[in-house]
Structures are given as structure tokens and as C-alpha cells.
Image (cartoon, one colour):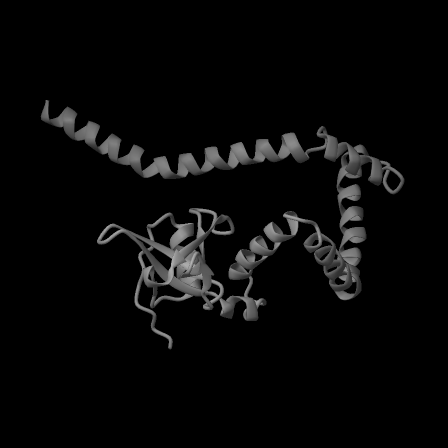
Length: 212
């Protein structure tokens, strides 16, 4: 009985050693099948590649790859042209048109500010945000939010601050709240840390800000 258990234990140890490799191979096979179904020669996109490659090669097996390469050769220079000359004027025109639409323009501006948190190029917009704690009730709920404007507004004779409360795990959404000034406190963390906290749904904990 002891020998049987020992041999069985050795077999289990070998099985557990092979299990990660087996699962990896199964996952790769599933991904390969998925790519073949949606991008292979028999898929709608694959048939389009075959159509593009037919004038250049006569072999059926090569038509798919020829069409794929042709599409790459056409799209890449177009992307370079868009980035170098067309992108900025087109983007400015689209943003100006969207911002003039009632309600949609306000929502677009709010979303654009949140996207600025993830875009390091928008340094000015990012610098305008300040992480803050909002307290609701004595010793009750504390909410981590962003303060886009430190200037309070008057609501029925009392000063309030507009704060943006992101949603987890998608911080580009959220709610705009007007909180009494005495309920808002600076949070000694960076804006990037706030984004990480909401993306991780609280797994990342607030830490003291090391930069001044």
C-alpha cells in the first residue's frame, strides 16, 4: 500500500508539473482557432484579402498573404499622411463642432478632461486637476475625487466646490458633484495614483505623495 501511494504521488507530481504547459498549449490552440475563424482565408475579412491578392499572384494559397501585405502597404503611408498633415486640423474642427452641440458638448468636455488623465501630452489639463477627499457625514463616508477648479461657487448662500468622482474600473466616467467647501480636503497623492486606484477597483491603496 505504501509503495502504491508513493508511486501515485510521483505521478501526481509529474502531472502537476505538466499542467501549466498543457493549459498554455490549449490556450494557444484556442487563440489560433479564433484567429482562423475571424481572420483566416474563409472569413469575410480573409476573402477580402484574397480578392486584393488575386491580381498579383496565381497560387490560391498565396492570394491571402498577398492581399494582406497589399493592405499594409496602402494603410501605412496613409497613416503617416494623416499624422503629419491632416490629424491636427481635422481634430480641431471635430472638437469645435462637437463642443457647440448642447449637452453633448458638455459631456464631451467632461470626457476629454478624464481622458487627459491617461494622456501624458495633455499636461496643462492634467495639472489643473487636484486630488481631494470628500467627506459625507461625520466619521462616515470618504470619497476620493478630483477638483478641476479650486474656485467655489455660491449655491443658496453657501460656498460649494465642483468635484469629479470617477467610476471603477473605468475612470473616464463618473459623476459631477457640488460639495460644501468644508467637506473637501486635499489628498496628498498624485492624479496618476487616483487613476490607478479606480482602475484597480481599490486594490491599489492611496499612498503619501512623494513629490511636492
